[in-house]
Structure formats: C-alpha cells, structure tokens
Length: 374
Image 1 (cartoon, rainbow, N blue to C red):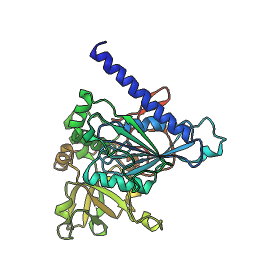
Image 2: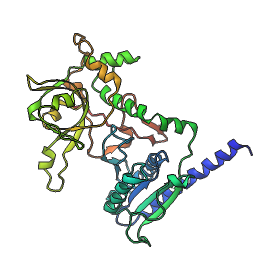
Image 3: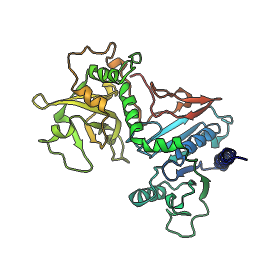
C-alpha cells in the first residue's frame, strides 16, 4: 500500500476514534445529571471539529444542548474576541424521557497549552467541574497538554471524571496554510460581520466595492460623555479618549444587564462597532455597527480591543463623504448579533459570506453568528 493509502487508513481510524468518543459521551449522558464536556488540546488539533461532531451527536438525544465557546481567536458563533454561550435545539427522538429535558454543556477551549494559557485552562476546568474531558493529542509530545488530570490538585485524579484521549486531526498542507494565515481569516470574519451593515443585495465583487460600501454607511451618533471606556491594559483619560478610540474596533456593552443580575458583575457585550470619527466639540461618536438602534439605546460602555482593523474599514473612514448612502440601509435593515439568546434550530443559522455546510441533516460547519432582523 502506498503512502497515500496509509494516510487514508490512519484518517479513517481517527474518524472512528472520534465517533466512538462522541457516542461514549452520549451513552454516559443517559443518566442524571447531564454531562459537562470540555474539549481540550493544542491549536489546530481539531477541537472545533470534534465539538461540532459532539453537538450533532447530543442534539439528537436532548431537546437542547449548550455550547460554551472560550476560543476567542477562532470562535464558532461570534466574531473574534468573544466568549459566548449558545443553546442549540433540534427535535430529539426520545422527548418523553425526563432526563432529556436537561441541558448538556460542551465547552470548546483555546489552543494555549503553556504558560498563562495553560494556567487559564486549568482554572477554568476547576471551575467548570466537567464530567468528561476530551484531550486531543498530536504526535509531537511537546505541543500537547500535560498528561492525566493536570487541572486537579490530587495526583491520582478523580474517578468520577471521564478522561478520553483521542488523536488530533492530521496536519495537511491546507491546515498549515490556515494556521499561517490565521490573521487573514480573523480579518475576513470581522469584514463579514460589518458586511451586515449593508443590504443583503449590495454587490461586493471587489475590494473597492467593500470600501465604497462601508464608506456609504450612515453611522450611528452616540454621545461621547455618556459612554464609559474600559481598557484592560491601560488607563484612558477623558482628554485622550478621542485620540485613543478613533479608527478602532470596540466591544459595545450595556450596564443594564449587570443591574438585572445579582450574580454577574460583567456587562453584556451586544456586538462590535467601528469608530469612524469622533467630534469632541459636539460630544459625538460616529459608530458603524450591525447592532440595532433599539439595542444601542442602552449601550453605555465601550470595551477597547486589540483587534487589527481590516484595511478596508480604515480606508472607508477617510473615503469622500459625498458618496450616496447605500439604498435601503436604514435601521430596519440592520442586524443584531445575539451573544446570548434563546434556543434556536441548528439549521436556521446563516450569514452572508459564511453559510452552514449541511449534509443529511447534520451541521458540518457551524456559522459564527445568527442573523436576526431587528
């Protein structure tokens, strides 16, 4: 057998291993309480792919399945930079079983396996107390997570936790290319996110079309004095905030979510915005965002980000302002990104430029944002 045949055999064996692991979790979930499954491993090892397989396996057995995505670099449902939780729903076969009304939780983790990233993963696993941990391992031992139940203080581990080790996805040339061009992929996701500000029928056939489209968007105007600007890495003064924010992407948040909750002190981020301009004399920020006007009325916090702003957005900010506004791009066409939302059918998720890949009723690629008309 040639080399290609050997690689194909290894890939089929790896697929069987993944399917058996997913089925084992689903089988264990027949009892109470529902499983909490953490999927861990180095970057580009297949954590997101296995998480999708596990979601598809569980969603056929439960009315709802929760998905907690902590991979802020390449999240499944949101633009880069978000930690989010989603509840997915599809008709389960055995809906009369009371255990099936429980909600299993699948946690997709980041690919950091050393230093601060490993410390964060350790603390998160301690807090989440998973019933199952799926550990993806590569052939390069130095790139893998520590062996055993490394997050526990007891060296012997916990017999109540099911630790399952599976082989990572093979690193084909395409995988290496994706890893090398991760920044470009993040840029494309951000561009696709802000593309929602334009009508669906707006033609985009070239890079200049994107620039002209973004330049034609009429920005929202928010009072600068009523916004709290939060930067986790530095102190932002009122005197320098306009220099600090102009031409950046910010997280738009509302403190109203904190007031409604006695258990959470973290404001709810409702989406991203690009600050096109700041008029200090008029106390006004010009903001481009697909978040609806209704949600923006409650926005009073901006989180500074370390995003590299796509060039087309920066060029649109200095494009001649006399360009006509895109037709039918009013607020009623704006689309809101729900970071936390009620259960939704898997197969109803879609996005311009990013579509679900569906085969035989199963989601092969889960889009990273939900489109909802505001």
